[in-house]
Length: 289
Image (cartoon, rainbow, N blue to C red; front, top):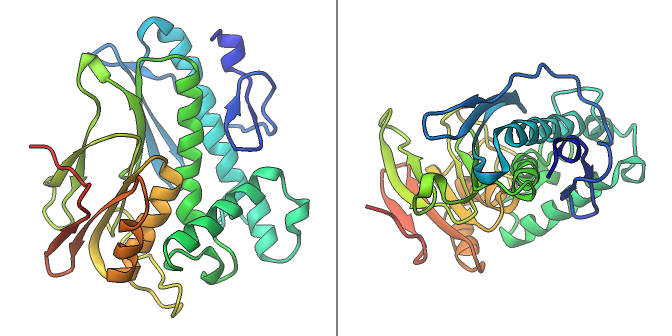
């Protein structure tokens, strides 16, 4: 893919970036070039959505210049999503929808798409993930961050790079074999032991972990409306980060019922560390030595 093509993105009805048309919405952001690592990879950290999204890209034959351009486009995608879906930005479309100033029919198509994904995640989690039960109105935050990383990763995949990994506060999505290795090895942070890992898993597509690591206790029980977190750490692996992220949120507040819901889904696995230090995992969750 040429740099000119990489620099132009549109969103199709499935939320996948297509490199033929200009982006729907310009985003003003300082551009900090990705830096070249010792392994021939490009690394970049982008502050967005109240966290920092880190990029690690192995360009392969596509080349470093193409990788830098694609990372920049991926960052623009993340900022566009933030501008649309942030409930902390009073002028964002989702904030205006929550206040009743706009109707869903007034929104760009990707808003309806995200809310449809939220409905599917709500049903899949037996209601333990429910954006419509949040204080102040519908809040898709628990899904949209993962969704945006899925889309950003798509820009890197389409560019033909050897491997890439995106990490947003412990929620990760990637592809390929970095540095001629056997895939990405992902450490699950221990909820109490600083700088320690509770386990290591092989990344197939996406890994999402919910816990009070960055933001403290911040989750809400959708059935009571009260703050709640029944476990110390909840991890879900799956084919995409949008649903994995939503299910990890559900698992953190829904206890055994949410765990059974995730266990019943094809392609998704779960690992939970209880408040008492007990551990539980679905049969397909494989840990590396």
